[in-house]
Picture 1: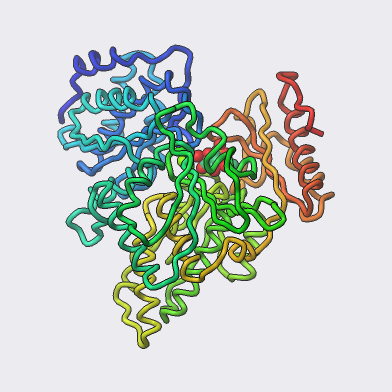
Picture 2: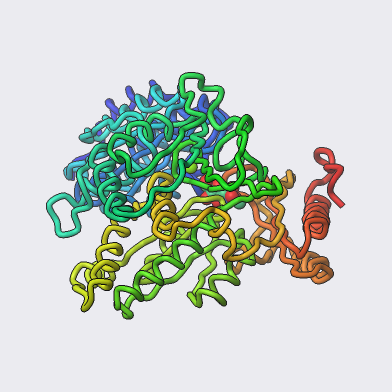
Length: 549
Ligand SMILES: CC(=O)N[C@H]1[C@@H](OP(=O)(O)O)O[C@H](CO)[C@@H](O)[C@@H]1O
Ligand SMILES: [Mg+2]
């Protein structure tokens, strides 16, 4: 068995020293922090990507350099497994260990112990592809990643500036090429052709909707959607705003899906016209939320929960119309899903709903258990997964009437318009537009499925968030002892009250979520629980926010 060329590793690692006194953790969305701290981490992630590829017999591993909806000065790195899914959970600990090695000797030791415990054959080839968003720090970090790949002589292709979902798509295409599961051409152009072709089939012959106004958060979604437009031709009209990627400081500033969802308001500078459709991407275009203004000028958000409800409703109808009763539809949510959406799914659509911990990898995994699994985080990250057997059924069905044949054709195109590797703002946009076009629905009609319970999300800065331990898909605290009982006692006093507390996986805070029958009750509940959490674990650190009760 070959071994690592230590001289080579020492030289390359010397170019990417680890900053002192920083502890890195591969979290919900990979490593994410101030860009200036990331050089050594990205270099070592390159080593790990090469090891993972060797372990998987030379299958292509993907890497995306992005910090999504976070500010321009942040960056991050995240690995993609061969079918376009997130890095397998057990490898998160390995990449975390590599990133925290203090010396080159430790680095070599960790690599050697991985090679022996995971039985990695270093003579196997390694193939790794990578891309990045528009952040100015991306280019240098990509170079550090390439240095990491050189440690193990990995073959590599730089896909340059792409959206996160494009990189996931390309990774899957490369690994399925020439097989019956071939996913498409492994290029941005192949991606545009596949999605646009399916969309055109779905809206063919239907009356086109009024233009959609699209806020791209001044991120990678802007140039990439511009690139996409010629492929879509006149099948859709989109007015793009917040497309200034030259001025990095504008990235995600007062705009984008996270801003709109968190503040429940339109991006700054957008003058809304009642009953028109608006949508916002986040900074790496893997999330989308829709919104509109009602006639009384109220702002109405159509978030990930609303998108999941719309998708589930449409697919259920389509499956029925196609006469394929054997395909069942399920929806996966997290505890942050609005209680009204869960009720709608269960009681109106009669679909099974699972609740899993936060983080796309959990939702994705659970969704694979259904024939058609719809998954969305409330913040707008999600997609629809068709199981291999559902796809087979859809592709072999013929239908016994013209109406059934049309429904089957639509189901096939629908499965193609959806990026099944990961939540994808472009693809989600197209499937929402498909449904609204086929039904000729305004955003208000879509919104009428159910009325959101008022809700509030509060961040609590505590001394040590690691003491908060949860169970039951993060809906209950088991530690610190007694805190959950105190929460339950407060929640009981509120009509339709629901609240839960969990440590964030991406920020150094504890999050409190609350919903109740009315806005004032919701705010009171949220701030009471936030106050309770703060008092449990502040030890006098920081100021107690004034709104906490
Ligand atoms: C409440 C919330 O929106 N949490 C977000 C956030 O996770 P936290 O673990 O809550 O920090 O970032 C994740 C990664 O982007 C995303 O998947 C998740 O939905
Ligand atoms: Mg994102």
